[in-house]
Image 1: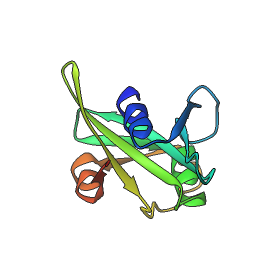
Image 2: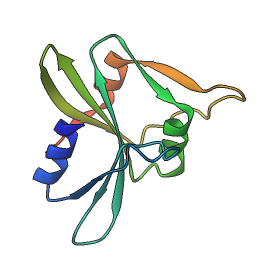
Image 3: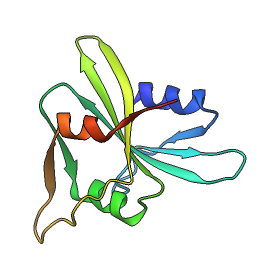
Image 4: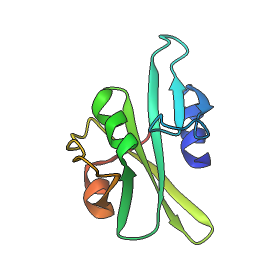
Amino acid sequence: MQATQEAEEHLGYEVRDVSGERGLGYDLESRNPHTGRLRFIEVKGVSGDTVTLTKNEILAARNAPEQFRLSLVQIQGESAQGPRYLSKFEFAEPSFGETARSFSVRDLLERAREVH
């Protein structure tokens, strides 16, 4: 989460950690100080072949596609590479009773972009 928070602050955004608040579906709120517009960022540290999103995370992405970002931070030993953001991705609606869904890290990274 630190890598994503630092990237957002470097872009001039005001970042608030909301990961302790249950049910939001994202970890960070990032506010543009000029417009007041919020970005909702779910952070995933990835070191394997898949990443799992909870139902709440998928619903947050679907409910606010313009504002939601999936931040993928590749973890290699003690170092973090990234973040890379996936935005405006059309996650399918979770099925009844489905609590989480796994995605290919490679496929998500192919669609993600570096943060500038």
